[in-house]
Length: 210
Image (cartoon, rainbow, N blue to C red):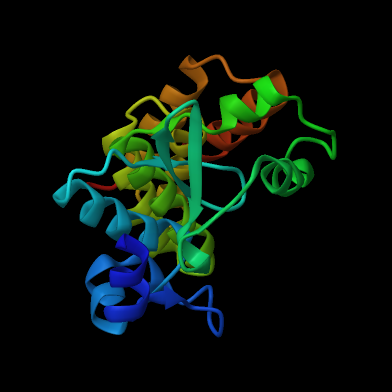
């Protein structure tokens, strides 16, 4: 019944013509255009489910966000990008395979991939999607990365990336602060060495106010 309302009566659907349109990730645009990607459609489906008392939750499945709902003796997994159809264990294992080294998954491994995603995790994934879409715009990527660090202040990859982005747009003081914090997380030596080289090259640059 929920799927019928969302996809038939309200007319929401996955944007198969332009999957990487950034509007697919902004809920105001998704609601207005009735087009989205798996995670944005899932957010709308989850909100409707909450309003009618259905215990659905987001599933940050590799490659394709899903929705789960506990049932007697198991878990119903739905794909909001394909009109909320249910996905069985065999298909889920096949979908996950390319993301886990092309290995066959055991039941307990699949179960780990189906754990509920927190609201914070959902927001983080939506922002990382936008970073992929905006990969040619430093300022837009910077804004998305900054918001991820609001959610996850110690996220090492984002600290490094924001520092490098600050460097590219000329905010040297902010860049040094982020890159120094990244080094404090004790990253792999290869990553740490490349960042130290960047800091040495920029140490003589005049710091700019942010």
